[in-house]
Image (cartoon, rainbow, N blue to C red; front, side, top):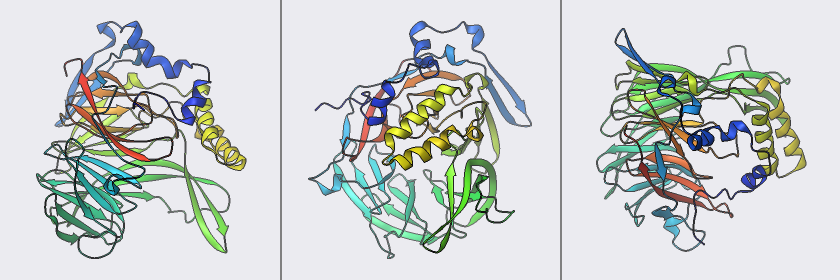
Length: 424
């Protein structure tokens, strides 16, 4: 069977096709088909405030044009239900684009990093389950360390391990205190990222309460020694409750369906931080200093009843029991989880040319249909349609690396070529 990445093939998508075509879902595609607004609707202002460049692009959703286009077929497809064990994955946490064009696949469940050639041929396997040198107890994140090596963070062992892509394990070093995950960049110091929940008022009671998590960003040096904490961003809003199971007290946290979240992405010089409650991204230098702020207020839109209906339909399609369906639908329709505007993005990525790809917000079990692309200076460049059921991991100048699953929930890594249609 020929693989078509744009075919909406999942049960969720099949169910959603039976829903009315809501204006909020089709707005971007209709704008692309009907043409764009006049130049008056698209202007960029840039101001310098104490050395921080603030860019405000007034482009509206209806003015977005097609910036790029993905190929209908991937050029690389790695994954198998049976056969080559090196192509069988369990839980793909990350897919990395290596400096030589190779592909690294981080499987957090079986605690290995597999290296593939640019064409998808298997090259090497790094790591494995254990607590010895070069092994992982709890592999949570990895990244490019140098031109020919990869670094990985073991949460339980509290250490960074460095591997040569060609010769395997090289060394490891501890990091204290223990962060949730690490962000790595080529020939630069790692960044520690923690999720923290405010419990100043003590543990929640049996009654449901609401809390806000925060994303804490701390700089490290190349040896893993902690440095300054440079950011504390509002992260996920969650419902928090206490349940008793088998005589144990358990704190249960459930994120809001339409709540905001914070993200960090590495750039060629520094990193970007974003919070999806705002159409705003902030670029920091490697030393943590704030360098630029990017805003695009015209790309926000209000939350409408059809958004709730879409999320409810997807939850129903994904529910395995009537009780699960009832619980999920109740949470989605809870008006306390209904902000005036939907989050600005589900996530964002920085490509190899430092453009920012802001993936449109989509509730759980619904595939985002497009990404809005920004130039490094804050200009809105346009929109790119995305394949169905495709999760982006890395973007280069000519292809996008990501993951998908088939009808049997077998995970695959795809490399899909993309073509830039406009300058930027």
